[in-house]
Image 1 (spheres, rainbow, N blue to C red):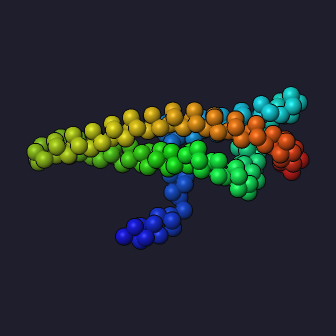
Image 2: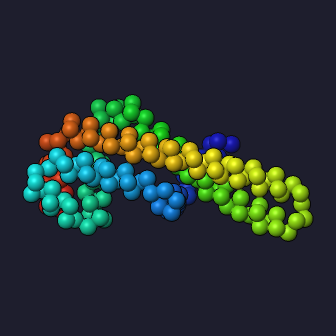
Image 3: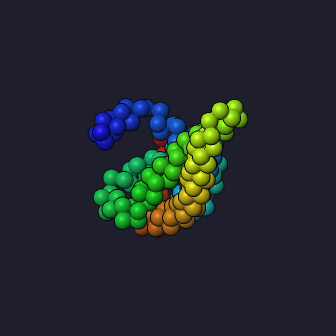
Length: 178
């Protein structure tokens, strides 16, 4: 069952776009984390490069950071330290809770609208369960999101400090090609 579900979910191309949309609509922690990473990279650059990086459009800033970190990802020592930090695990839990918040919010609205008809007394219980689950997911999402922004700051500052020369070279390379 898990293998079948995994196969089905991996074929859904819009899943990545969906979780980005959900985050933008409800919480915004992904964009805050991206900004934290960008600021960490910019701080290690020379002042002339800093102003040039800040003058880039948000799309070009994101592309530059994505280019730098995708090239750094080839470093197995860096990947190991990222795995040890637990940042990927916490992001996965954040996305799971994000989907839960969305799903239980929709179910809560559906139960509430159905409850207005007054036909089934069990709807009140379903509404209470869905509403409670929605609030639980919301609270966990907020806690995880705040923790992730702090962890992202810590991890990105460590990476930038450890790889400053490479990041500076990659920045110049991405600017000359962009």
